[in-house]
Amino acid sequence: MIRRRTTLLAPLGLLAAPALASAQTGWRAQFREIRYGIISSENERDAIARLQGLAAYTERKLGVPMRITRGTDYAAVVEALRSSQLEFAHLGPAAYALSRRSMGERVVPLLRHRGRDGAEGYYSVIFVKADSPFRSLADLRGRSFAFADPNSASGFAAPSYFLRKEGVDPARHFSRTGFSGNHEQSVIAVLNGTFDAAATFWNNEASGNIQRMVEKGMIQPGTTRIIWTSPLIPNSPTVTRAEVPEDLRRDFIAMMQAMPQDAPEVMRQLSANTAGFALARHEDYADVIAMTEQNQAQRRERRS
Image (cartoon, rainbow, N blue to C red):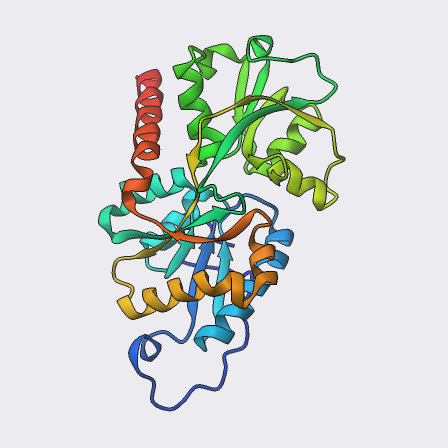
């Protein structure tokens, strides 16, 4: 697990290195393993199980093991990337915006998920307990609200930004706001009564954080109810550092884009809603970056 402001990484999964030829060429002469970081949208046990297939697939396709690490929070993964502890990372859109603030053009977007319905985006939703009396944002005035992580797009940046555009300032509308730590914890916090409502990610009727928690047996179906949905957010990017060799980037992209055909079971483990990967560009996230900058300006204004 990645901890912020530390150089120590604990792996979620590292497969034994294959027998390497005495003389390596290209990027393999420099990298005996590939380090891949992920943001902490779910609990560590399930993240370990879900990503072991990716580690095995990488070794099979590229001939080197993949060391997968999970951050204690979103910023920890960005810091590990900035300090050259990772070659690749899967970030949320707002975490990508954070990486651009801290790394500039040293961070390079490579891929983003493409949904089974063809969508290259997802949504932030606000949800409540199904048996609660709350039916609208107006009903939540004076109630408590949970965000997921300050660097989550669907769990903080998007709802903060779009609610203000609708005339609802979270700092004034809710009696109390807080950060749960990740998306799963937000759902648990609402169901156990710690918060009246929370924000999380949602793809469609069949896929999202709540649906995944139902599938894993963490919550019962029908225990939550969505009362607000944001405009579309671009799907999360997989990124690299600018100094990672071009031939390694090329092989990594080819491996990931071949996954739906070469290893469909690994694709399903990564995301039940993902059909494959589209190439990503910095420009895809211009609106998210503007959104996070406005949120930051609002927070600075309140503190001054």
